[in-house]
Image 1 (cartoon, rainbow, N blue to C red):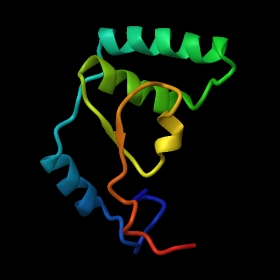
Image 2 (spheres, rainbow, N blue to C red; image 1 turned 120 degrees about the vertical axis):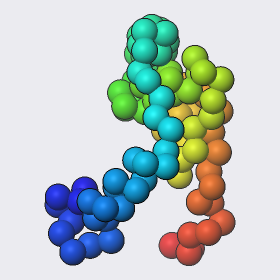
Image 3 (cartoon, rainbow, N blue to C red; image 1 turned 90 degrees about the vertical axis):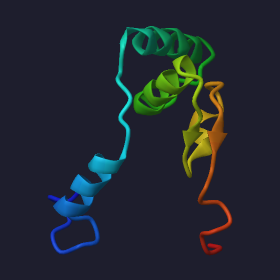
Image 4 (cartoon, rainbow, N blue to C red; image 1 turned 90 degrees about the horizontal axis):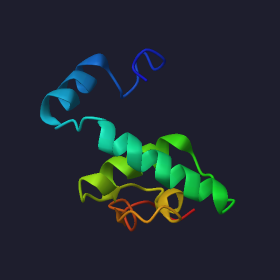
Length: 93
């Protein structure tokens, strides 16, 4: 984003700062296995959903975590816990 958004609010230094303070979770074999099981079930049920969201959900599921997102609907069919920390803070459309 910083490369596409020169002069905008997202800068290389803000990304570097975010990387410094966040804990990153490894995409490991249990998460890949969960992804394949979840994705197969979604395809079988005719609700494929976005691959990246399914991958994020599989990481959260194998680690007993929740997904914090403003797009809870993307995870509704996957069976992962979600929280929306933005709801109530955005202006009405």
